[in-house]
Image 1 (cartoon, rainbow, N blue to C red):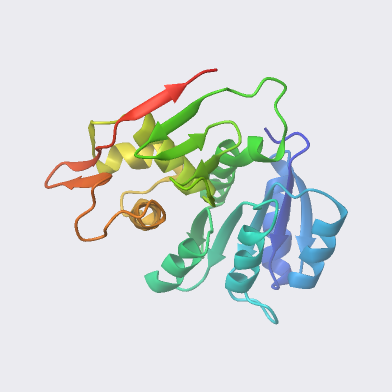
Image 2 (image 1 turned 135 degrees about the vertical axis):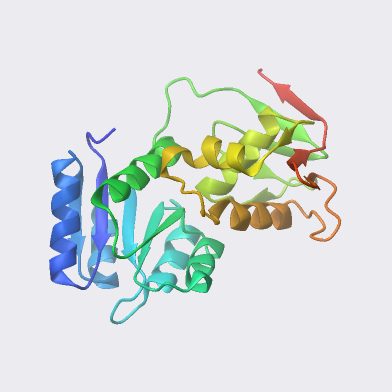
Length: 242
């Protein structure tokens, strides 16, 4: 996975930037060290960046603003947001605007690497054109999702943007319809070993996915909440392999 994988580390503390960069280099990744938004933009203008490790608190343009730009750009560059703030609100805001994951400072180096690898596993094929992309097309309640291109279309045929985490969550539901899935299963299937017992990422992504599917937050009809059990994707799912 590490071969030909470029990770941009955006951090204005030179010591932390060097430490994170060195850690990722030792894991076999190619690394671009960026002091802030200007350095990152220059890097993005030169070549494809597979993942941005982005500090929340930066001088100049802050991490939230940079993350918003990255996620709405044409390539939808994956983002691992790093924050020294302990306030869950900052982390939730980061996830709301499209960060794929977050990590609080101080962090265990092994956890950083695990989260980086987990994001890359979920998103690495987005930036590559597969020689024989899977032909699977999922249809449900008037919606359609092309698994190869990760393109979701609403009943009117309009595209709906999904973050990497939202796509993974929707795929879990589409491949396990009419089945109650508990929170631990959703965490394991979408985030694997990088998820912790108090991880709230899945809750934010579930809320966002429901909103994008037009599911009523109070009385959802597509992704139903099962009291004491978990969540159930109630729509009938048709799968085309043409």
